[in-house]
Length: 402
Image 1: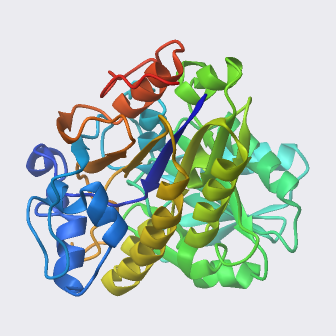
Image 2 (image 1 turned 180 degrees about the vertical axis):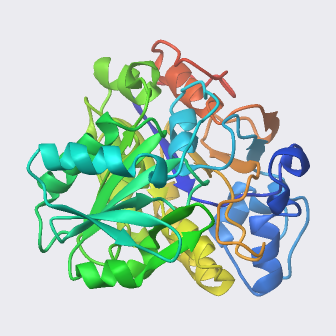
């Protein structure tokens, strides 16, 4: 019996990785946590502070300092770049492979013909230099301009005008003729095609819809990530589900991780993500929970340190309600999937190591060092529940269950 909770603060990095000058020079100097504290010096996060937040930063701020009662460390990204989808696959125990990519322009004609062959109305929409597709006057098919260039095609929908099941069908057809790592089918209510078109952005060879600016996140958000070559069978979520352990995925984790044997709930508001986590802890004696707080990442994309800090305060309050529910050998790991420094000067993810803040009555206090991969969290969960190891990762510590 026992609960193992992984809380991912999306985009909450703690310092540029050593390879950044070579592989991602635009991220040189990135440190999401440090720069948030510099931009909002009065920021106080008492619950994260108790878990060792300032220990991972290695310094104190005006309102917070390191503590000597925490179990903490860092994890490097093994996947290339800095990506939510790949980050979560890595957290679940997938061994990352080198990604490949291309702009929508190289597949535009093929995708258009495939969709027409299946009865969809398709027209090409021209931007200043590039073009994308409009399907059934309610859906756009274009580049994802928020993740690393060329890593995803977005199928963005105004779902008041088209059922999400149809949007997903469009996404699967795009997936069938594309080799980019992700095709993302998503949409929301109370937006129109014009709202999508008003949020078009071009970045060199790429053209897409700025999703936060389009408004699709604001009401009844739906999202499914269709990955290329991802095998869920080697991930801890599937291994646990098949072994009979209840698996719950909340927030962005529900969008990007396949969960055939568990329960997934796509949620954007931070307080709701943490309330869903709290509800399971109040209800289930045994569970694996992975919950993603997406709004931190959205604030990073908007380059709004002030908004980011406010979301962290909401998350911190929620963590303060979760920790008292942990008992026995329950474990909580607070971490991130990459960075998203809102002060770096560009609106993309930043390649940063991430914090590992570990809480549990039987967790040895002190530093667990720098882990070579996010997958060490999956391996720790597998060891905790005494199931087969995922494809990648080494347990951070052995925690015996009662």
